Length: 460
Image (cartoon, rainbow, N blue to C red; front, side):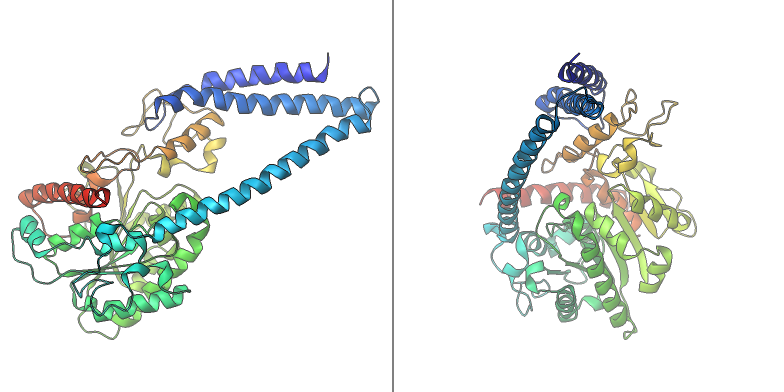
């Protein structure tokens, strides 16, 4: 039988088996077209790979044994194919560079609704700021433009504000090096009186510069304005394109934490230092304090909350390192009551069914602990979801693309969407004053504020 025929048969068989196995349940919903196409696409890729490998292997064996095509007929197609692949690669690289440049430009461009400099001197980009608003980038301008007002504080806390909240943001375009950006952030913190507040939260932004306003909103209204927040950017591209900047971002965080530590050592009255990171920001901040509790002691951190940390060996090791003084929850209902003593300092909020948390290279050939053979499943992990070598890895990879289905004001505690959980979890993790009535008002406020912000962005 000819090598091509043998390869075709092997490819069809392998592809069919993979396609059949790829029709199982996944962690998050996919669009119908993707759900239909995925088994065919995965089966086709595997079938093609198996078919080519089988056919080429047989051809090479026959060439070596003298019972096949000669050197010219064997090598020529390979050289032609290599040339075609090289050409496609060069063209693809140029196209990718143009796309990335366009995305970076979008990250710099301010929304018209957030392009007017703030009138509040307690935020970056406002009066007296050492960074101009257009240096903050799109996400930075949104962050400082979302600071809670005195009316917000009264609405949620039911009490009068005691201070004006501080928000400091330094974008990647504000300076050329991490050291310079951190220097600007420290100047801003001193200028705004941040070190005189009761709480100072350091947030590690995502790759685009996105700093989630939710945890800062909670801190601002529950502290009655007696808080400050700071974030320093390191890029302008989405997180999935910024994985190569984790070390740069972690270095930036360490520089900032060291600078804050040195500043606080000169002051008798010090704010409670809080850390917050979400998604890639969580990965970055954990990488900045690789010693876990010992590093938190060094910097004087009172509490840290890391949300939806992308999976991998670093995340596993860090979890183990913090086990002695950490608490992990999937949802607010799992928050401890009564609170253990001593109170946990490190908090992880990670959905059982978050593919961003669950996806990792080991999934390719190893059954994960969240898909045990006894059939037990965490919340939102389908009961009939099994593990298949290679297939589950591919399914989880596609899951990460649809892990966040954000609709303003419609909070879903599912996948990589943590908006429904943050009000209660931030309140507990940072030990902020609240009661049942305040918690209800807080949730309503967060939803209303998100809708208002989305409408501002969409209106322009």
